[in-house]
Length: 404
Image 1 (spheres, rainbow, N blue to C red):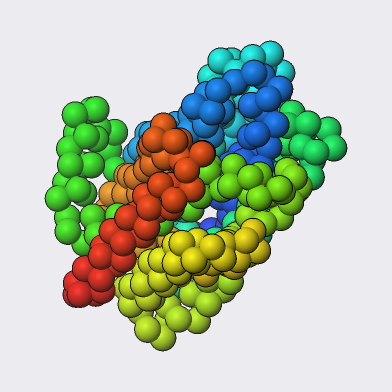
Image 2 (image 1 turned 180 degrees about the horizontal axis):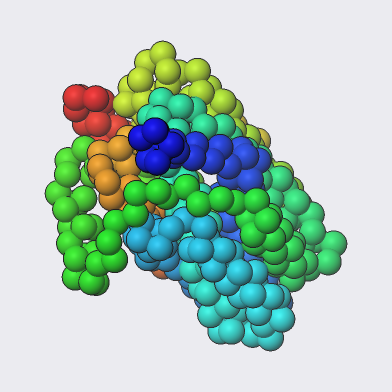
């Protein structure tokens, strides 16, 4: 009788299945279109808009800076508002700002549009990554993120190659048009298919409390060393994308050939991510990151030795950069997972801070290299990259010594 009057409460509904892997890969890797497609076309863009080397670099750096700063905002907002609304708003801005970049008549408006485009893209990158953390345990999250970053590597590989080809055929605006189409597909696909994955939202906090969360994260040694290793190697990767087109151009390469040569680095990145899927579960994420840090340093030191010996032909440079790409594949995804796990409940903020460190570092070091004359002095530019790789190797060594 009591059971009739007071039936037991129904069991809670099962959690929704994880988002499809292809959707997460599209969301996170589509952002790379905004970076990879345009890099081989920078010399053409510079000539078409009568821009200086510093102004042309800002087309890349403005995107990267806002991609970094935006991840601080998007990651924290997704902790309080949920992943889906933040991701949809960001992908819409990514699309609209890309259209503005497409029709920009001068370098100044192009830089502004690229900055807004980067801010919108930041939500795709930060929220897409933290959705993986929501949906899988630590080891599986590392495997899934490595799979996605392997797919991400295909995008810049095709982007560098295709961007140069498109630029040679229809100009740099054609590369921007492809970005707009990609961003629109990301928005529509997530609108149709993405379910909310943040079921433990934190209370909305005032701005000072949000800043306090970042301060606490930066006081966590585990977070700092893992985030630093990934940020430095990401920054080195994009710094190479800023000055290598000029070196390849000096060696006689066309925009198409520049894209093909630098896509070898992205192929190495894909190889490293594929290797990471097997090394991570067997050696642990921290040791995998350490091995990648050592490989990155060895690759750029070898490039320096070959350059000083007068052997640095275009294909030789590309071969060294392949192994640098492998190192990135071993480090970047795994370092993010290690850093985010160290953050506890503030995983969205941690993901955003990791992304901000990566992108702001990329813009900062890339702009520094060009400002110092790295577009004309390859040895100087390479020296900065060696310094970055050495510091990343040191951080990865420190991370491997910390308790798991």
